[in-house]
Structure formats: C-alpha cells, structure tokens
Image 1 (cartoon, rainbow, N blue to C red):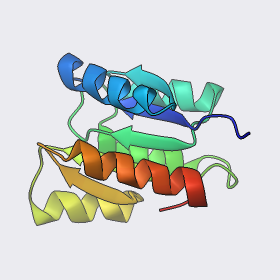
Image 2 (tube, rainbow, N blue to C red):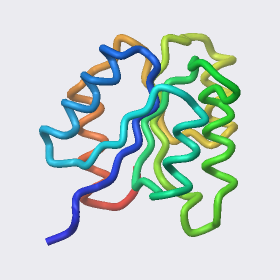
Image 3 (cartoon, rainbow, N blue to C red):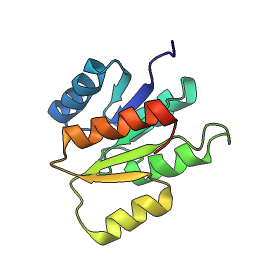
Length: 129
C-alpha cells in the first residue's frame, strides 16, 4: 500500500484553508496547511510535498506566484510536482502569470470541491495531472 499523498495547502483565509484541509484529509491525504508564502517555502524545503494547492494573494514577502517559482526552482527531482492554484483572481493575466510560473491547474474561487478531489485522485492514481 502506498503512503498517502502529502499535500501542501497555502491559503491565508482561515476558513478556506480549514475547509480544503478537511476535504482532502477526509480522502486520506496528508495535509500541511499554512497561511503565508514564506511558511509554504519553509515547509516544502523540510518535507517536500507530493502536491501543492496555492492561493495567489497571500500576505508576507512571497505571494503565490513567487511560491510557485521557488517550488519549481528546487532540486530537479522535486520541481515537477503538480501545483494547483485556487484563487479569486479571475483574469487572464493572472492565470497566464501563474501558468507561466509553473502552475499545473488553475481554479477560480468559488471552486468545485468535486473537481479538486477528482484531480487529486488522478494524481494519486497516475502520479501527474
């Protein structure tokens, strides 16, 4: 039996962060939930996740765009993880900027929990999006 996927969740809004964590934990995934970009980078450096779910507008020195870039810049074996953006930014420029930085998928808030879980199950089954 494979160990559960480790999912890093970066979301500054407490209720959304808790909801995403509870949703994915209920499916048997391990969750590391943080509210700031610097914490996300620190967590990834200590125990690299299998998947990252990121908000783009977070407080502190590193927004979600910078977190994507930094995750992609980590050692090559780790730089290919799926990065799923969940953001209130619903404009083409933000979506393009996130995808150019290295995001794998982009969901707009409010997002479909079913669609997110479907993507996570696909990653669990096939190892990629």
